[in-house]
Length: 156
Image (cartoon, rainbow, N blue to C red):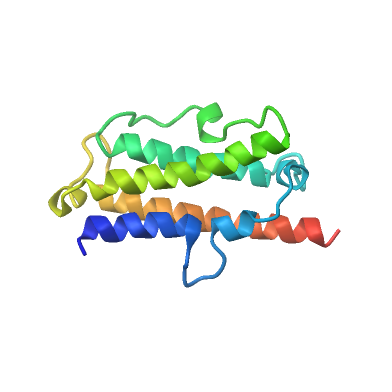
C-alpha cells in the first residue's frame, strides 16, 4: 500500500472508523437530532452542527490546497459556516457534506504520487503529508468536542 493510499484510508476512517481512540465522527453523530445539533451550551461556544460544517469546510479547503490553490486563510463564514435553518433536511445535508468532503479528499489523495506527498506546498510552510495528517487530527479533536457536547445534552 502506498503512502497516498494509507493517508486516504486514514482520512476516510476519521468519519467511518475504526479508529483506536474510540468513536469516530459518524458514530458520534448517530442519533443526534437537529435540535441537539443546533444547541449551544453557552452563546460563545460552537454547536455540534457548526463543528460538523467546520470539519467539512477544512476537508474541502485541504482538497483545494493540495494543488496550491486557495492558500489564504478562509473568511469566518467559510471557516465556521453558519447554520441558516435548523431543519431535519438541513442537518442531514450537513452530515452528508461531512462524509462527502472526506470521501472526496481521500479520492484526491489517492491520485498523488508518494514523492509529491512529502513536498512542501508552494506558499505554505508545510508539506502535503503534514496537512493531510492534520485533517485527521482536526476531525479527531473536534470529535472529542462533539462527544462532550452530546454528553452535556443527555445529562440535562
